[in-house]
Amino acid sequence: MSPRGSASSTPQRWVVGHDGSAGANTAARWALAQAHGRDVEMLVVRAWDVPALDFTLPMDSFEVFAPSAVCVDLDELMALGADSGVAVHDRLVRGGAAAVLLDAGDDASMLVVGSRGLGGFRRLLIGSVSSQCATHARVPTVVVPAASKVEQPASRITVGLDGSEHSLDALSWALDFAPEKSTIQVLGAWWMSRSGFTAVAQHYTHDFEHAQATFHELLDDVESSDRAGRVLERHFAFADPATALLKASSEADLVVVGERGHTGVAAAMLGSVATHLVHRSKVPVVVVPSTSNQSMPR
Image (tube, rainbow, N blue to C red):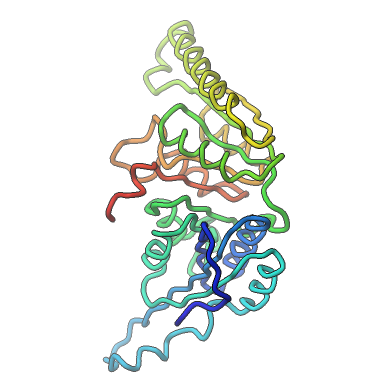
C-alpha cells in the first residue's frame, strides 16, 4: 500500500511501528509531541504476514490477510500532525514485524516503537519486536512504555556517560535532539569490578577518582560549545551504572544511552546497561548506535 499523507520534503524522517495496540498508539503520539516545531515527516508502519495454515493457498490470495489500515485512529494522528506542521504517512508491509521496521528505519533519522504490542505477555515490560529493534537498528531507536506522557516534548533528558565512544555518541545525539531551554542531566557512575570487591578501599579509590575526573573533563569540553541555552547538569555517582540511570529516569522525560559502554562485551549487540533500561524504565529510552555501526551492512 502506498503511504498516505501530503508530500513533504523534510530533512528528518521518523519511522513509528504500529500494530494496532494501545502501546503503539502511545508511541505514535509521543513521536508527534516530540516532532512539534521540528522539520519532521512521520511514517507509521505496520507489518503483516500470512498465518501458519494446514493447507496451501495460491499466492494471489494472500492479500486477504492484510489489515485494512495501519491503525484505527490514523486520521486523528494525521490531523494532529497537520496542526503541528508534521506530515504523517502510513505504510502496510508484508513481513515479520521486526524485520519490516528495521528495513523501514534504515534510511530514517529515528525509529520509534512501543515497549510491547499485541503479541506481548502482559507481565513483560518489553516485547520481542521492540527488543530486536533496539538491539539491531542502525539508527537511534526509542522504546516508549505504554504509560509514557505524550502531551509535551521532552524537557528533561538524562544521558548516561561513561567515556566510551558509544556514550559520547549518545550525548551528542541528546544535545542535538533536546529542545531549546531544556535540561540535560549527564550521569556518570563508577562501580567496582567483580575482582574489585576483594581489594581494600584504597586500591579502588584511585580508579573512582580518575573516572570522575575524566567525566568532568569531557563535560568541560562540551559546555565550552554553544548549546542553544540548554541547561547541562552533571552528576557522578559511586554506584552501579544501570541502577543509577534507572533511578535518575524517575525524574526524566527521556533517557538516552549508547548501545554499549566500557563494560560491554565487544561481540554483544546491546550492552547490559542499555538492556536493563529498555526492559525496566517507565519513561521512553533512546538507544543510540555507534556512528561506525550505522553504515555497516546487516
